[in-house]
Length: 244
Length: 244
Image 1 (cartoon, rainbow over the protein chains, first blue to last red):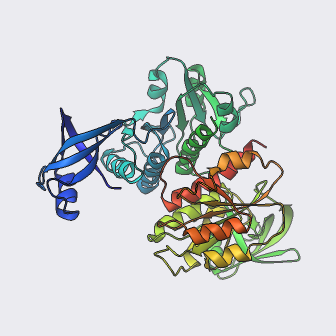
Image 2 (cartoon, chains in turn purple, orange; image 1 turned 90 degrees about the horizontal axis):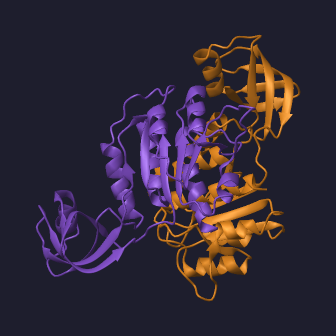
């Protein structure tokens, strides 16, 4: 099954941009009258008939609409400090998209070696992983934020489950495994997990998170790279949702 | 914490090969008399004192021995068909090693596009991921085998839990999620999971696996790439072990 992304859906018409049109018309040689499947990136799949087979801007008429196609039964935000090596963070974006994530926020922590992150490549990776894994909703790649401002700005609305994974041990605030915490939360569907940089979160960042209702967690005994920790958090939520 | 790999441990002496010695002596500039941590790749950490600081072949005297250092409470074999793109399979080897895996068997399936796989690079990646994630045991990267011969040769000894993940639906043999199956197996510690190629296992391969006591599983509703499915299987076992 091949999916195309429509940058615009108006009335009964889906419009593909130049990249998608070239792929659809020039590479895959689809022609007017043929049926194709189009996603709007917001969660809806449109089964369409191609009406304009231009490689510059193809158009397709909507025959059938499937809202929530390929969706998952939770809303997951991962706030993660980008790795020194960009490939590793982009690999996390691809895997998280395949599994099911809604929002990825590149965070700049006090211990981050990478203080700047451009989201364009990650957005392209998220689009291609969304199509490859047969989903209709492209996860949002937010603009980078500082850890403390993200924590302070996090919405207070319940029932949002907020988790922060850090590696140091604070006897006064014992960490529990992400699985143990999720198991208690069968009713919670709106989850945010924070993953720190190679240098971990600073004690101040962790303390601020706890003040804002974050639950301190660990991801098991293995020492995981930043991007592996981030994928493990997505896997924990994805696998947990299979048990609901 | 920096770990060095000893290719030979005899009596009270650990010997590093040329690569490890160069890294230890030339790059990190350790000198005789300094204390270093050495793994034998079989599960034991040795805290040592460097006695010969030669970049061609360093030697260290064992001060303290820690068997089972950085081990995990299960024995996991992943039989996985290598991906067309080698990087993707090698990425799986790195992530599985970080999380905790014991044996990786590259499988050649009837639908495999890749019929040949060389294990040298994967072995180097497994060693470096073992050291990076602070473990003393390097997972075995087996020589490639055909899916059917691996299944037929798989040891019959119980209590080994054998799982096979394929994507097609056989109404007569419904698949259950890997989490559901693991949850029933708190006593089982020896687990094998088979992950097919991009083209999936053939119905004959799946049937043979069921004959040999494999339980058919799925990894959830998302369509996952081969390497993502393989990592998800490792994550499921790793996260499941946190709940025991």
